[in-house]
Image 1 (cartoon, rainbow, N blue to C red):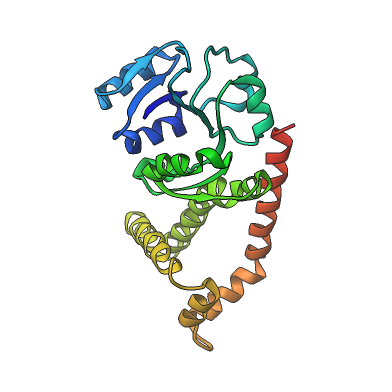
Image 2: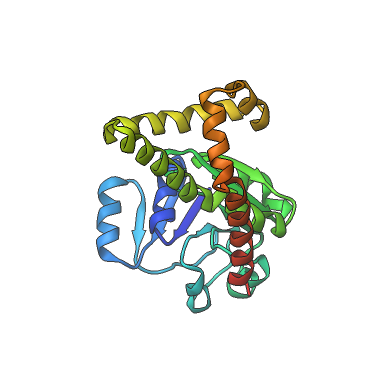
Length: 248
């Protein structure tokens, strides 16, 4: 399977590590970025222009506002777009392909641990999931509405989790723990919680940790007083609304 990656910025570049098993051609307009990628991935083909799409599965990783100015020729085997808030109907207007897929990976693709939301034409479902599973876990969703909702928890939440991680470390530093040690704890905490949550409901896990009148209960009460739960719910709502706005 031949893959044409159009755009190798933060997210497009993050996906390259997992795509090593495929025949990959990368289109990147910046010469400095092409030189950087050539050093890291000598096996891939690097171009400064878009070739004919015939015979390629196209991975589209440009900025959403650049879609209208994109010029292409030929018809792709399939188009997999990671453009935030860009609906399938708009993709069909600008790029010719036999099948269309929308996907939303996250920055953990750098470590092949992305959780990627996927939806689109059922005819290319299996192939899309196989390609996107190379960078982590790929979850098929039944509609674009579900994908727009999942954009928050799958695509944007890593930034929110980074905020949580930084805040926890700052709290520990404020009490006297060295910052390097604090970040070491936070990184291990996030990794361990991910493994636990694959097997345990979050509420049950919370109850196992929080004993009556203990330190966890005291901290939990402080979080509730600060409206942390409500803030995350509102963050999801704001992300969903913004995703819809970008699609207009």
